[in-house]
Structures are given as C-alpha cells and as structure tokens.
Length: 175
Ligand SMILES: Cc1cc2nc3c(=O)[nH]c(=O)nc-3n(C[C@H](O)[C@H](O)[C@H](O)COP(=O)(O)O)c2cc1C
Image (cartoon, rainbow, N blue to C red):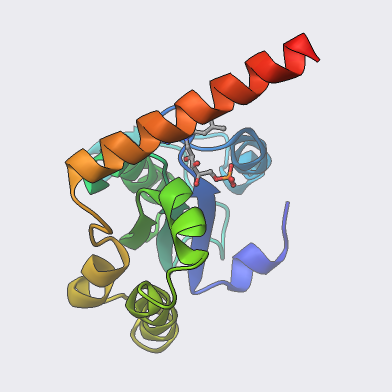
C-alpha cells in the first residue's frame, strides 16, 4: 500500500478516459489501495461502506483526465465513479481538471503557435489553487476544458485523420 497516502491532504487520480472510465494501470493501482479498508461495515454518506484504516480517512480526492471525444460531458461516468471512490476513502471529492479533445491538441499545436497557452496556464493555476486552497476554481477549470474548435470542425478533422490512418494501413499491406 503506498505509504504517502496516509499523509496526503489530497489524493490526485490522473488517468486518460478509457471506455468511459479509467486506464488499466489506474484500475490496478486502485485495486492495490483495497487494504485501506477494514473488514467491517459502517454507514457513511447514507451508504454501507467499509471503515477506512485509522489515520487514512481524511482530506480530499481530485481527478485529472483527458479524453478523445469533444464534449466535457464525456467525463460524467468517470466523475460519478470518483465521487463514489471518495466516499469509500472517507474523503471529500474536491473537483476534476478535465481536458476533452486531447488527441486534437497535439497536432494542432504543431504549426499553430500558442493558441492553447491559456489552457496550459490555467492547468498550472488549478494545481496551485488545489495546493493552496484545497480546491480548484470553476472559472479556472472551465478554461482547461474549453472548446478548442466547433463540433463540426472536430468531426471533419477526426474523419480526415481516421481516413488517413486507414489509407496508411492499406498502403503498408500492399508494400
Ligand atoms: C483503449 C482506449 C479507450 C478509450 N476510450 C475513450 C472513451 O471512452 N472516451 C473518450 O473520449 N476517449 C477515449 N479514448 C481516447 C483517450 O482518452 C485519449 O486519446 C487520451 O488523451 C489518451 O491518452 P493516452 O495517450 O495517455 O492513452 C480511449 C483511448 C484508448 C486507447
């Protein structure tokens, strides 16, 4: 069990969104946190839970994630999940730094200058807010999660990208 968790004011779970949820390594990491629970049952936040091992149930839970789809609502299932995880850990869920449309950002950064500078600056600001105040401001988080294009442009770019990938694969097969 990671010993730093006992002292942590905030546990930050950072994972890409895979299948509406967490990556495989993150799931394995969370499974390894199971010894934080004691083998008894208590009622917490109106739900039956295991008690948390003495000294571990305090502080907060935060989330950092990216996803491929366009809308911020794609994180809804993951956030519901981490709210439940926070209850399991007897900690407060304090918020999530979410960057949708992540696969578009990297190619768009190449040759398009610093049009995302506000996003990266806000991500740093959110980290500072979390460390200083124990929470990230909604205004800061909404800059990180802002649209980087309109949805039609996103769909066109994605379709072109995937068509290119399929074409490359076809060409490789014929070499
Ligand atoms: C196995 C797998 C499942 C994914 N599932 C989702 C998903 O459910 N929703 C979504 O918006 N993006 C999904 N994505 C896209 C990733 O969230 C996105 O590309 C992320 O930025 C990838 O981070 P990584 O490069 O660290 O894997 C998935 C990607 C992979 C490889």
